[in-house]
Length: 420
Ligand code: PMP
Image (tube, rainbow, N blue to C red):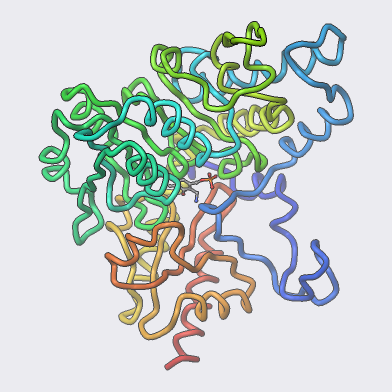
C-alpha cells in the first residue's frame, strides 16, 4: 500500500482547491481566476494545514500574552506552550533538550547567529571555512562576509558533473586550518543529498565544527542531529507546514554555552546594572526581545502534523514524486535536468528548456496554473558553474500528486511547441 493518503491530506489544505490566473491586485480567489492551481513551489515555501492555522487562531483568541516574565495566568499559559514548542523541536530532530533549540526568524538568521556569535570571535587569518559549491546564499554570503571581516579563507568542496559532492576533494580540503565546515544538507537546486555524517567525522578529525543547513532536509526526511553529530543545524518552519517568521538553530549545548549572545536586550538577561549584564540560561540567551511566540507554537502543531504522517513516509512520497518528475522531464531531449538521478535526490527538480529563458518558461507554466520558481534560487555561483543564468524548479510536498507532475510536464510540452 502507498505510504500516505494524499487525498485525505489535501482536505486539510483548502488553498490547494483554489483557482488562479485573474486579477492579482486583491489576494485570494477572485472572478478572473479560472485555472486550477498546481502548486509545485514547496522548496520556497509550503502550505499550512488547518490544524496549524487553528493553532495560531487559538493562540490569539485564547491565550495571547508575552512569555517568560509574566505572573498572570495568560502569560503562564503562553510560556508553557512556547517552551513546550522548544521541547517538541528537540524531540523532532534528536536534540537532547530545549537548551539546544533556539528559535530564530528563519534559517538565514540561524546562520547569521552562528557566523556572528561564533565566527567573529573564533576566526582569524590562517583559518579556513569549508563550504560546498552548492551553498544557498544564506550560508555562502554570510560566511563570505564574516571571513572578510576576520581574515579567514573560504574554500569550496567541488560538485561533480552529476551533481554529487566530491568527497575526495572534501577530504583534501578539510585539514588542520579548517575551523568550520558549513554544508547544505539537501541542495535546493540540484536535489543532491550531502553525506553530512561523513563530513562531520572529517571535520571533527581536524577539531573543526560542522554546520548543517537543513532548510530542505528537515521538512522532507527524518533528521537526527546526534546521529549526524552536527554541531549546528538550522531549518525554517515555513518550509514544513509552519508559518513564516520561525526558524530553528540547533547547537550542541556546550558550544551555545560558550558563545556570546548575538542580539542583546530584554528577555535574554539575568541581571543588569548600569555597568554590566549577565545572560539567561539557554536557549533564552539567544532569544532577545519578545520572541516568536505564535509562530513557535504553530511550529509545534506543524511537527505534530508531520509526525502523524511519519517522516519516513514523507520521504518515501518525496522520493516517489522526485523520481517520477525527473524521469518524465529528462525524457524530453531538449530539457536539461540538473543534479543526480531521480532515485538519489530530494523532492525537487531544477531544469531548463533549450533556448528558452527560465522566466519565459515559468510564465507559460503560470498560464497553465502551474506554480514553480524561476531564477537562480539564491545560488548565483552554482548557476554560473552550470553555465546558465537561471533555472526552473519544481518542488514537491506531502499533498502533491503524480497528476500534478503530469500537468507540469504537459505545460512544459506546450511551451516546447510554442517556442519551437
Ligand atoms: N538554505 C537552503 C538550502 C534553502 O533552500 C533556503 C530557502 N530557500 C534557505 C537556506 C534560507 O531559508 P530562509 O529563507 O527561510 O531563511
